[in-house]
Length: 460
Ligand code: 5AD
Ligand code: SF4
Image (cartoon, rainbow, N blue to C red; front, side, top):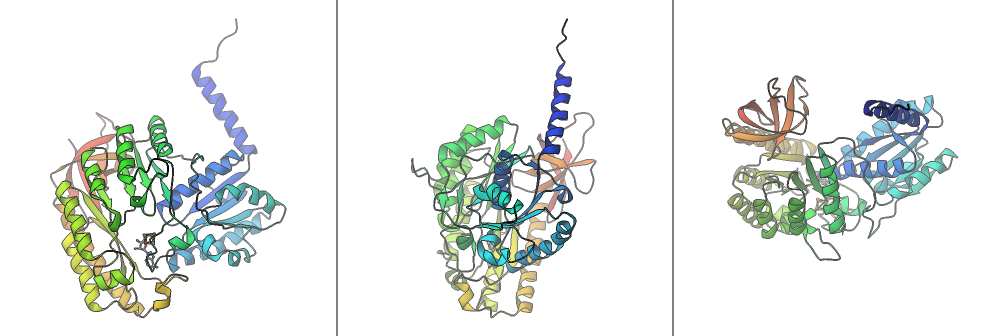
């Protein structure tokens, strides 16, 4: 009698055959720099490459193709890539057939200049990722390739991002930016705003839920200007639809522009328990004069009014922001106004940067008159003040109960778990041998210790 193989045997066979397959497949290694949009774009490129027969590797020394997905937002982001490229020369020395490509914002900004580097075989901007497999084939026969056209319609709607981690997924809902803040290179490197179809985003959220993901983050340079072309639905309506479609999942989004942070959006967040109570709302400066020079399109009064509405409807909502110090002509008084704003809002977190002039932007023509030592001093002042505020806010959480989504072992101590609260605070949770929690569980914990960056919980 023919015996049917048992399930484990079938799984073992499958694992062996996929290992053999991946041995024969060419291998792709991608390194990602910059924002979350780039993280999701890397998954899109990996999806395209996987469809073309490539296997992924996380070891560059084993790769047939190495791609760097780059960031151009500040000069130091680009310096890092140049250093990495220098280092990749050693890989190419060892493997003459290795193909090296530059993707992303720096590819879009520097174009042919990058291709002049002997090492680089292809340069591909954010709207041309469908061409990557073809350009790689050409590179194998010694032909360098460039694809940097920006599109008014490309949203990669039909491409399945290649995702490995099973807890949190990035879902991009729109691309590009039309805001033209005067310091920012993004409108030039990522092109005009365009939104993905409403239904395809909701379907992706449902599919991710079915695959076991516990959290999605809706992504865009300025999600608040999302608009579905067919139905006219706005971002608040999209968020509402996602919250209803996957009630068992946590939903986050980033990034918002204060000008477009509508009442409807704040009300939608307040209405749904599964929309995380955390808003990243970049302000950049507390001075109306600087905000106008930055073309932020709103005064600080509008910002305060939005914060008040958020705090009224969601008293426990965490807030974070982006700040730039040393924008052209920034005076000591402007800087003090930023310090005041940060004291008044009391952010849970902030990303703080020194102004970095970018070619093609309007601010580039304003010069870079603030000496570096002044930029650094102002930056340190806002960082120190922010750390003290975050420490105080976190301390006030001691004794409260927080719900933590377990993401994996703690980096410092693998015997403990690490996860995030609804308000996006990293929290350490002890392991429990009696009721063992696993990655992906949402665990109620009592906060017992805090710093400016982390909470420590004890099991209830
Ligand atoms: N210099 C410094 N910081 C910048 N950002 C954008 N462009 C620049 C620049 N030229 C910061 C802004 C933005 C964040 C993503 O990066 O604060 O919100
Ligand atoms: Fe850049 Fe302003 Fe657009 Fe943000 S909103 S990506 S800072 S231009």
